[in-house]
Length: 267
Image (tube, rainbow, N blue to C red; front, side, top):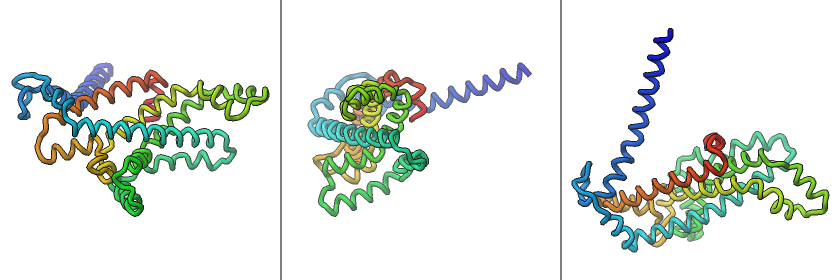
């Protein structure tokens, strides 16, 4: 019996390790080749250089894409966090039994294919000549970011001491002042984490941005796809490495903000 358990444990660890290697191997190849001295794709590289990083910094096209991604990501943070916060307060203060049953419907945009959302949004914004604008891309990205931000904020609100709000109201504080001075300090970590997650969702989203962006509003994923559809541009490896690093940093910051276990449950 003991021997059988050992074999099962060893087999589990072996399978888990093999899965981890399969997931991490492409990232290792990508990051390593971003430092290659040659423009041809070789692994392992024949030499190492920072020339592609230098070209990325000097490329106005890529820097414009970075600027667009930052603008869209910031707009997504503001829109999704605001909607999530209002929804979380609405759910908290509602007495209807149907509200809790309808909460899973907030995840519906995550289950719709991005192609369907992209075509629908393109038709809608195109009818008002608002496609290829920052606003259309921000709305599209907020459709994906808001449900996750809402779940994170709602989870953080379960740890709020609502008795302090009642005490502040009894002492004459206005509801708005109570929210800002009593509730917000208790949920600031959740707001920070949800903002970071919303930014990452916006930064990596490609399909809807492809439908809605134009020549002047292309984000990083759209420009990367355009580059590799014509030829294998080494700068794509550079920007991919930078994005991977940014995602890891953001997830670590989010985990430290609200706790790794709670973040994992919400994601």
